[in-house]
Image 1 (tube, one colour):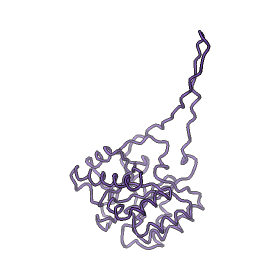
Image 2 (cartoon, rainbow, N blue to C red):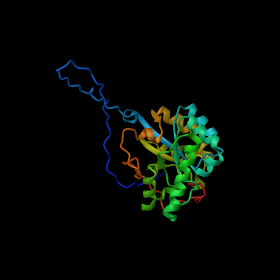
Image 3 (tube, rainbow, N blue to C red):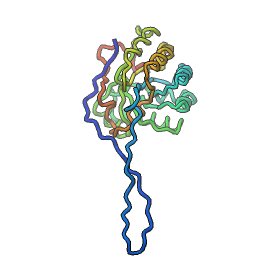
Image 4 (cartoon, rainbow, N blue to C red):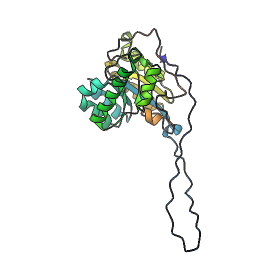
Length: 267
């Protein structure tokens, strides 16, 4: 029932470990002193010791944002919002409220076109203009990107890399972009079935039924021991290469026969 993707297999990169610099020490005349740096202690990423899941919401901000933020706050959940530039322009306060709630903003292009239909210059404009507006509105520059419909090619990947973004197509989806599936009970079950350790769940905040399903989804998953984290928190400890797809060991490509509502901000 649920959408599962296939991301190209990529070799996992090593975690960076930084050693703190040692301060200089004074030495008596004619005496050589070797100052050794304190042993570096690798910080253990949160999701290595916790059962994490990243809930993601596309196409906002929208009329449902305020309700969704209140629900997330009630359950102490953090999420990642892949927003559209055109809607950030229309809803700057809602965009700021997402950041104030401790959530992550991702880039989902300006107007939600199929990027594979565009020339490189147009792809760049769609993504870059959104980057600039989000930074201007919130003071935050997104580091994560999701292509509309999950559609990418070499041109898209090159632009994303140039803008120093990583790609997050998602590992599972509730299929709330299919109109016939927009039922609270169905989407609640879909989200719960999609859940898994380190899963990145693709949903849409523009779908009212998805937002209405969140109290049951969050309460149930919380009882199962899940920690709700942003995508960046989920990937903490990894060396992330701009333009590449993450999580590396998961999957993500939309099915060719899925019934989408169209490129105007519904997928």
